[in-house]
Structure formats: structure tokens, C-alpha cells
Length: 364
Image (cartoon, helix red, strand yellow):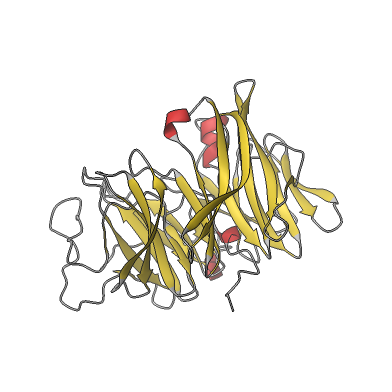
């Protein structure tokens, strides 16, 4: 019998642009070194210790060289050969990443054991011009993933995109939903709840990007719009409800069972555009988009709120989009003393402490 995802683990992530995957015991982190060879490595944060270590089972391994960039060595279990950016996932005891071949342009799904010792190529899933973050995917069960691809060559153009079902057993890839439009995309914020796959459908109208929330039923094969509003982000908050953000307006709580909508928070100058996440207790509003689309002087913040929209704390934002909040930890990346970006965390038990500071990590 297949192991089937029955609740949304994706709500703990702020968006599709992430380099971290959560497991019950810790977090698997993908790092692309940024050199011309495109290689990278996996590290792991243990929930109990709060320490970051290279995902390597070899006791005497040095893991990386002594260059400024700390490039991974190929003999290390943590080594990733040209991983696609932001492609790490965790499911049922395994880590998954997408590997890129610069000679053939092939993109391959790779499955890695929890200790990093075994790397297995599962199947080729497509091609890409480079190792950019063009593919997004979510794992539905032991044999099925759903995947999308944004072709960089059609950026800004009228194009057709598809949501694809990938059968890991038969190695077949089947489009289950297609959409055409100016700068069309169906790649953002893929989340699974029971047998429904939620995603953001993007198009360009009057030279402005518009995002709509859609739902694909895995059993019937039907896709429908969940909301009529143009939104910036959403997150599933349990009991058949979701919270979504309308730009320059506010946050709304939507009951998918009754169809009722309730406004829980109005925007202010710092939250006109936000990314949302839910840790099971608190709602998080990360406002990096506010600097991009509304006020370039807006300070980067993460607002910790109740489900009624009340702010209980404000955390300092990171160098990029916030990554994850699951009730145990919240993770971001920071620049520290002019060095390479480092992961940093705040424990879930401290998110309402007004004096809390980020704890900066460095893999050992």
C-alpha cells in the first residue's frame, strides 16, 4: 500500500524558493556554492542539538576544501553534482534533489539516504538550459510527484505551461493541467492537502503580474479556481481553512467547506506585499516583497501573528526570503561579518520573545 500524504507539510514554507526540507527530526539544507562548476552540498540541522553538520557518514572526511567558498570535495557523502537550485525535498526517510548535466542539459531526480551515504538516480524528468530554479515539485506519495517547469526562453511571452504527474514506478510523465497566457506559470506555492493539490496560477495582465489560487483534484483530474481575488500568497491553516493575502488590502481567512471569507488583518505600509507561512500555532508574514513592489526603504521583517491577525512579535528579516517555520524552528539565511551567507535559526519556543536574536550556524 502506498504511503499517501494526507495533510499539508508545505504550509511551513514561505514560498517555492527554498533550500531547506523538513523531516521529523531535523532539516536538510541545500547549498549551491556558486562557482562555475555549479556543484553544492547537503547539510543537516538536528532539532535536538541545533547544530548544522555536513550530511556525511564518513568519520574522517574533510567535506570541503580550504578555499574562501569552501567548495565541496567529490569524495564526501554530502557532495552534490551540479544540483538545480532550490530543488531539495524530504519524503518518507529520503532526501530528493534535481541534478543537472551541463553536457546533455538533462535534469534527473536523485534520491539520497537520510545519512547521505547512498545517492540513487531515480529518473530523468526533463531538460533545462542551466541549473536555475526552473522546476518546482511536490511529492504526493511513494510513487507520484507533481512537477512544473518555467521555460526561461519564454519569459515575458505568450506561452503554455503544464502541471505534470510523474509516475516514479513506470517513469511516465503526464500533463494533468495546461494553461496558456502572457508569461504564464503554474509553479508557485504547490501544496497538498488530502487528495487536492493547490497552486498559484500566474499571468500578466495590463503589464502587471496577477496570481490566482487553483486546486487540482488528484482523484477526478479536475482543476478549478479556489478564489476569484488576485493574491500575493496563501497558506493552509488546518480544519479546511486557508489564509490568503490581497496586495494593498489585507489578510483573509477562507473556509473551504462553507465558502465563507473573513478579513482578519488590514495592510499597513510594512505589509502591503507579504509571503505567508503557518507553523500550526502562529501565522508568519514575511515582507521582503514589500521592498520590491511598494517601498524600497521598507525594513525586512517577519511578523508573528495569531490566526486573528494580531501581531505578537516582529523578527528581523534575512538576506533573502524566509525559508521555514514549523513550530520547532524558524530558518533564514544571513550575511555575517561580510562572509558567505549562513543559516540562522530562532527556536519555536522563542518566536514571541521580543528580545530574541538569530543564532547563526556554520556546518561542521
